[in-house]
Image 1 (cartoon, one colour):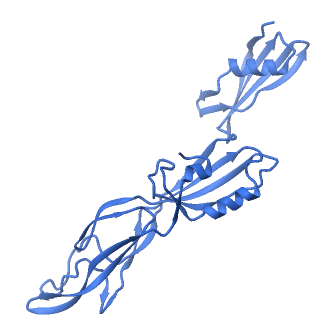
Image 2 (spheres, rainbow, N blue to C red; image 1 turned 90 degrees about the horizontal axis):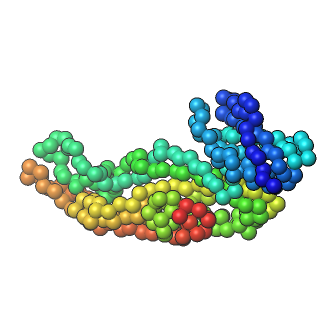
Image 3 (cartoon, rainbow, N blue to C red; image 1 turned 90 degrees about the vertical axis):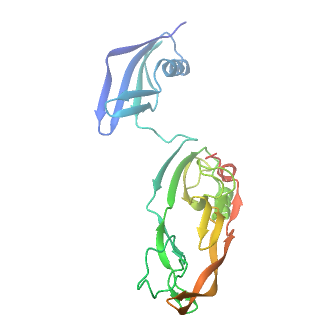
Length: 268
């Protein structure tokens, strides 16, 4: 027998804080709660646009009021983190790095006496002191809801073992080399769904860098760059001054690399 599914009079209840809505229906023609639930899901919208933004279907609630007659309430609210879904937040307040070579020398004083250091910062005898600068650095926290039994003690140990690794394939839209896994926080999911927070630091890959007279430098985001300096001289107004200039630039891999999307199960 066909199930007749229709809204009750004044069938919407609203709440503004927090934004919620409940739609009330009647279903007549079946004694099966499963069939009525399937009918309700088919006939109702998965989401509703409201004055408070988009609300999402949260549940289907049935009350059997007669032999083949159900009252059906469908609550809507802000998005829930269901199994397999993930949410994220970000922080772009940057990071700091110690540099020993400037992008550009603005000026030197007195101009007719100060030697050209080639951009080297803080030369003191045979020492290059350098300075700390703020660089672009994004941190992303991903909250992922795993299925029951998926997060176990061995899985938590695995997360620990890959902390401090860098992606070798695209991950969360970032290119290989740009994502550093900082670790995860969660709880046991042996007998229940588990929500795990994953933390990442993002640093952009770079090409075509120039440091002093060394050009064409290529650096992956989380590789370490360092400069080998050489003693040199510069003549100003007939006076020869000792200086230190960049001779070689080295790019070193300091983290292990993994297929992060495969290892964590999301973000490809």
